[in-house]
Amino acid sequence: MIRRDFSERDIHMALDGELPSDERAAYDAWLDANPEMKAKSARFTADRTALRAAFAGVLDEAVPARLRKVVLGEAPVKAAVPSSRWWLAAAAAVLLVAGGLGGYLAGVDGMGQEDPAEDRLAEQAIAAHVIYAAEKRHAVEVPASDKDHLQTWLSNRIGLKLVAPDLTANGFQLVGGRLLPAGENKAAMLLYEDDKGERISLFVTAESAENAKGTYIAAQDGPEAVYWLDKGYGCAVVGSLPREQLAVVAKSAYGQLLAGLAS
Image 1 (cartoon, rainbow, N blue to C red):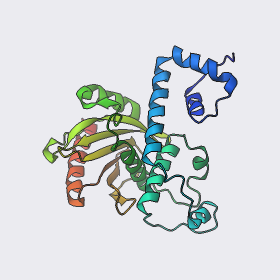
Image 2: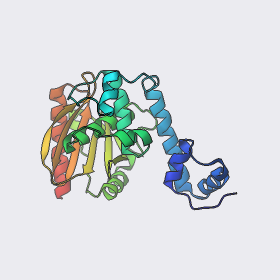
Image 3: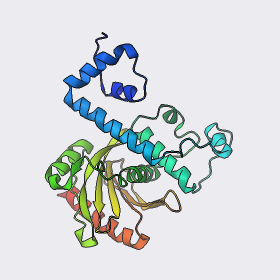
Image 4: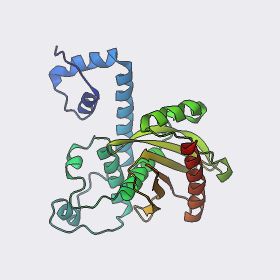
């Protein structure tokens, strides 16, 4: 039996079927001896299953000729709003690349494109929302019932003092939160739900000193992000609410986040 030190990278290799067969027994033994890594493996497996279920059939569609030309550098990139089905596949790709799981996609990510920080933040936030807001059992890693731990854990992980905004006045209750990749950084995602089951999410990460704010829509029928980059952090509130309502909720969340960071 092969004996060597395994790491989180090997978990991804095993899920992708790239772990050498002669290392499998040692890898399984390593998982059994490391409960934290075994839990990660189970979580990654659940996320992968959720991704496949959410985008079944879309990722198998033929790539349009115009997009193939863009990737291969044979045509200029133009700002456009993609159709909903292609945008859903793109959202999955954004999240996979951000987490280091999309080998080939990571190789072509950004070819011939500008990648301003505000667009990148909004795209990551929307991609995360599309994946996890639809989840029923695995939407969050830490539930709202453990709010103090949730805030402390995410604050330590992303390097910012994070206070989960109270949005009850806007009709939303905290469901919980999770930690996500955000390029080379980490991001906190807080999920909220109203009494009708409508969900919005708050995506927060440490960013550069760049200042920007605005709204971002990746698809005509997809969720919208209201975002800010300020004081060394990036924040986006994502949802499918009417624009005016989302703006009000976002303003409330933004004010509470600023107060938490300053306290």
